[in-house]
Image (cartoon, helix red, strand yellow):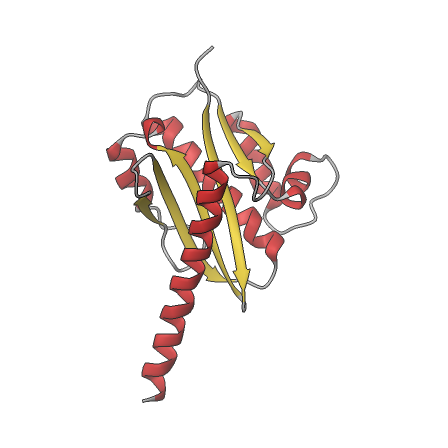
Length: 177
C-alpha cells in the first residue's frame, strides 16, 4: 500500500474575522503543484489562497482569511481548503490511488462531516460528497498537544487572520482620510 499523505488544517476566529490554514509536509507536494494550488481562486471568500514555507522549509502552508462570525464555519472552511489541496495533489501529482488523510482538531466539524444525520453547518453536504468521492480519510488530532503539523496550522491560521485584520484596518484608515 502506498504511504499516506497527511494534511493538517485549522481555523482561528476573532472580531468577526477568520483565518484558515492547511499544512503539508514538503515531500508530499511538488513545487509546480504548490505554485498552481496557491493560485486557487476559491470558495474561501474574496481573499485568495496564498502559500508559504515554514522557516525550516519542511512544510508548505496554504492560508486564507475572510469575514466570519462562527468558529464551526471557519473550521469547515479549513477542512474545505485541505480537501481542495488534496484534490489538487491527487490530480496533478498523478497519485489518484494514494490515500490522503486530513487531520483537524475540531471535533464539531469532523462530527458533522462523518455522521449520517442531516448536516448542521452550511456547506457540509457538498464537502461530505467530495471527501467520499476522493476517498479522503478524516482524523481528529488533539489541539495544542505539540504535534508539529497541527501547531503550524494553528499558528498560520492566526497569522492569516491577523494579516486580514490589518488590511481591513488599513483600508478603513484610508477611507476616513
